[in-house]
Image 1: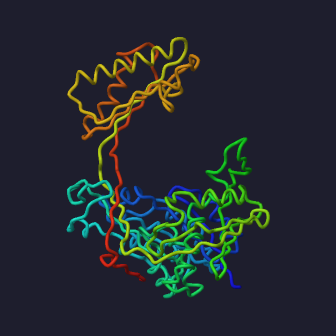
Image 2 (image 1 turned 120 degrees about the horizontal axis):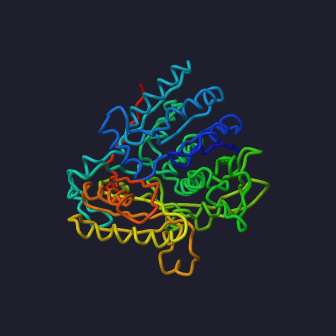
Image 3 (image 1 turned 90 degrees about the vertical axis):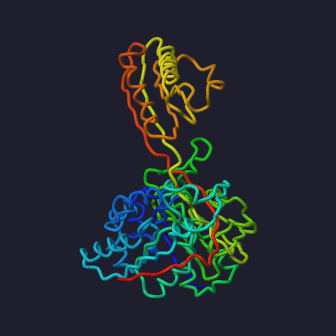
Amino acid sequence: MRHIRIGAGAGYSGDRIEPAIELAEKGEIDYLVFECLAERTIAIAQQTRMKDPALGFDPLLAERMQAVLAICSEKKIKIITNMGAANPLAAAAMVRQIAQAMHLKLKVAAVTGDDVLDTLKAGDYTSDQDIAVNSLGDKLLSANAYIGAAPLVEALAQGADVIITGRVADPALFLAPLIHEFNWAMDDWRRLGQGTLVGHLLECAGQVSGGYFADPGYKDVQGLARLGFPIGEVAEDGSVVITKVAGSGGQVTAATCKEQLLYEIHDPASYLTPDVVADFSAATVEQIGPDRVLVRGATGRARPDTLKVSIGYIDSYIGEGQISYAGPGALARGKLAQAIVAERLQLSAAAFDEIRYDLLGVDAIHGAALSAQASEPYEVRVRVSARSGNMRDAIRIGNEVETLYTCGPAGGGGATKAAKEVVAVQSCLLPRRQVTTSVHFE
């Protein structure tokens, strides 16, 4: 039975680059997939594009392409990525420039159509939190539909060596080469369900080879500093062996695969994607050798008539200030510092939706009740943070903490302050007929 090998080169935007180079050099792969787009990432990318129309794609795009493009060209490895984020056309243009500078002849495709901001602004849509989308007004930053594998398959059929997309469902990045290579029908729900399982296992890269899995003394993993990213050896029937480059760090076991199989799945029997409603409930996971796990048995049903849309908007503003106290009485001085800031804010007209007073190293994680029996610390760091409807009041938080230098307890030091926008995410459903995708070559 014919097989293809797919390597997962990234599990998020800021992921390590060295494992992808290792996959390209030593993985004997046919495809290298970079999954780099989270829900808020594309909203932030849209903000960047608003400031500069030439930007809005993944900030590590150029560095990643410079690292792997020549190797992939030499070994005939095709690259698929959603690093286009809010601007796939500009991202593809940059990849073409990098390829030309390296004297590489590559067909680079951009897939567009996921940006449905204008459609949502013009329509009457309600989010999953019962908010009218058009009521967000100027706070609305982005609206991107999770499109499926079809336009990626189209790009591969036209000979693309590199495909740059925006908001495509994560498993679809891996499903597309399976449909293309094995000529699966777009309504072969059983294979599409199994192929979606392949994509789901690989989409977070190092998570299935021991990253995020490790828990010392309970689930020990060796070599995390040299974690090898996974390879899927996929057969024509959709069954897959998850493995990694020999000698790389981490581990691929039945346990790591089972954890990833359940990761972010609300209902394993009904995982909604743009391509299929996947059913993982009958999947089996079998360790067949060192760092080799066979996964098969997933199936699926007809795809939904609607597509999920991720909506990014400016929700509020957060201000924060921190300052440290050390030596005898550090905890008492930290508490006094908190009380001073609280009283100062009461004296002002500042308005906050939420406010927190934390003593880092004392009660910042589990709260005051569970931390009450802890011994006296030698040092403590005070953190005050608050969420407001305007930037002016958010900035005030850090300023009040900073003034503790000369207006607060003895021995304060190392004050820091910051204020930033809070980009929040909601979602809604859009009939798929209202989303039109396109493949661009230049």
